[in-house]
Structures are given as C-alpha cells and as structure tokens.
Length: 302
Image (cartoon, rainbow, N blue to C red):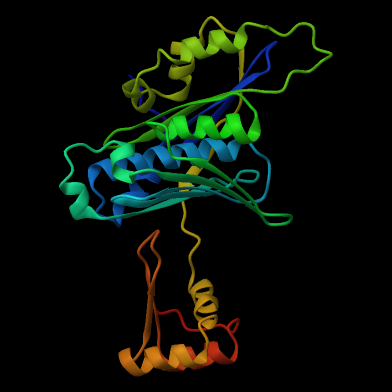
C-alpha cells in the first residue's frame, strides 16, 4: 500500500448535488502539537480530533484571520483548544493546539470518555477576522463526541446540515466533513436523495481507515459509485504564532508597578507559550524598555 500523503486537506464536491466534503489528514502537525507536552493518551487523542475538526471547519469559510475551537470543561479536562489560520495561495493552513488537564484526576478515572473527562461544559467557536467583526458561537457540551457537538453547533447556529467523522491513532489525526449547501431554487437537476445516500456511505468508514488511508483511497472506498470533483490538496502544518514581541506587548499591559514588583522578587520576567512551551525571558533592561515603549525592538533571548 502506498504511503499516505500527510498534513493536507482534500476538498471535493459531488456533481449535480448541493453536497460538498473535505478530508483532513495530520501527521507531523499532530505530532508537533503534542511533542512538547506530556498529555495523557486520552487527552492526546481528543486534541488530535479537535485539530482535525479545526482544519475542516477553517476550510469551509473564506476569510483572513483566526478560527478557534475551545472545549471548556468542568472536570479533569479544563480546556481543549485548537486554533487555525487559513492558508492563502500556496501558504499552508497553520494549526496549533493546547490542553489544560488535571493529570492526577485523569489517572484515577476508570474510563476516559469526553463526558467523564470534561464533566460537561461548552464548546466555543470563535472567528476573529483581520478586518471586520469578531464572531463567537457557543453550544453545550452534551454530546458523546467532539464530532457530535460540532454537528449540533452547525444545526443550531449555521442551519447547515453537517456531518463529521474524527479519528486519532498513535501517529495521525484525521477527519471527514460532509456538508449540505443551501438549495438553489433554480436548480431542477439536483439529486434530491444525495444527502441521505452520501451520509449512509460515509457512515461505513472506520476509524482505522480514516487514519491509515490516503484521501483518494478514502474517497474511492466510500464514493466510487458517485460522481465527484476532487480539487488539489492544500497543505497544513503546525505553526505557533507566539513571538517575543507579542509577549512583550502583553507584559506591558500589566503596568510598570507590577512588572517592577516581579523584577524585585525574581530578578527577571519569564513567560511561557502554552501552545509550544517556548520560554521568553525579559531582563531588567528589557522590562524598562517595554515600560517606555512596548513596540521597541528588543534582544532575542529565549
């Protein structure tokens, strides 16, 4: 069997229907997202699913900005977050993710389902465009899977029938999205049964197939009797948007008194990116420069 193309998003559209789809496949993106952390296996699995879901949802909209999906739990899993910046032209879609967990509480649990790990909560989807108004949608975390929660979000907020299949193994995370677009009143040739038929076919896909087969193999396995247009795959990669400059501007917001108090106690100011675990160190001279001008260039010291 040929090696599965990794870290890409494959879009496709069924002819004479109002149904489109996407397949997201993550390998190095997923591994890079968890490499600098020591998450429990169950949390790694859920983070992989959320990263795949974030890649899929980002591809359904056209905008320049950031899309994030947060699972805000009330139990041992406090936060699960994936964030994406869409690719433009040949630029790859950029993904990153993070989790906040009570590892001891998870270790004491007899089973690690989404429900038991989170203890309930909410899913928050945020669109933050470079230009224009920020949008946020919230749905209850009351489905047994991430896919189910996101399907509920689309049903309630977007009113677009949408199905998702998400899977993670030790090496890869992957997802399949099928979405029914609004009917065109002038289209008399559309296949009225296509949505139900395509859903039935997609439901036969196993988690192992989703994570081990290439996108073309998945499409052939499920839809070889359908007429579909398959577009060029788009690249995906792990990329953290943190920088010394961003942390410097954030520190400036604390105010001069608080920054100088930290210097008096610790001798320097240290801060860490929770996504990639990079540390940024600010010396007393750096801090004084930030107080005077947060946008001034500073030496790179990590």
